[in-house]
Length: 402
Ligand code: EZ4
Ligand code: CO
Image (tube, rainbow, N blue to C red; front, side, top):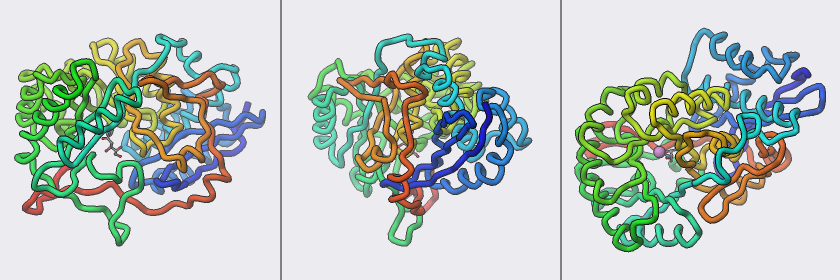
């Protein structure tokens, strides 16, 4: 089998998605997600100019060799643009491989280790009461695990509480929106939120929270301690994880389970946190961590150290990424949970898919390959539109972590 062509599509059915489609001389095709929110055309150009020409004529079944060709062969390793591009190709190659084997992808990985995949979704409100109600609404939709976020008194909409989480964001000039942040105002608010959620909805529902990289280690340690009575499933992204030593301090102070890694690109970003058992869940996901070839290594490595998986699955990864994740989730012996924030009908119209949600659980489906397709005609109706993730400033104007 030979690769005859590779096309890269950038479409915006409500938000920008980068899709790679690999064509072969035997008629089989595969698709992969290469979306990098706010930097979409960088990943697309990387693919079109620097990757596609090298792969024409190669055997698509040699996904391991192609992965290393793109990773080692570039000399410049790692980085979000490179790894999203590699992920797009790698996911498409596994799609082809599984189609050639006439199997759903999870069978090639070792088969199902469970019958269904626990997922969590998002609930939020500007006021605590609103967030408590939103959790109840999600419970009534069947969800068994819910991430709760709430507005902070004295601040305009903060991360996770506005209404722009599903769609492209930019200000009126098409540039990044600016948000305002105060850790002092945030820290006492979150334990109040979870106290009220537990009081209203009981002990059974799994609760999660995302601090979105905004704290220092000692602040994170304090928040983790304050949240212990409410038994969170996890507390996510407390501190920026470039400095992984910071997690030692958090770990020494709290039994609240910790999750991190949605921005990680490679197993090297996970190494210290996993080896030293400083976290409980690794958030690495197909599109940002280099595709199934790389993600399954991270998952196995995590399994050696009592770390479970928790793939990032917000709506700025395409339904292809979610589909590929679900196959890995169904297989991984140390699976933890899968994020699922949902997609609009417009987004789903571009990505026909075999995956499904029922009563709080997902399943990748039994279609051959990873089970997600790309509708070129539907995509063509939604041209790329420049957009950004927001930036964040402290109240005195200091640029902060978003
Ligand atoms: O901010 O996907 O856990 N989910 C998240 C997401 C991320 C976006 C960034 O592109 O933190 O909402
Ligand atoms: Co997050």
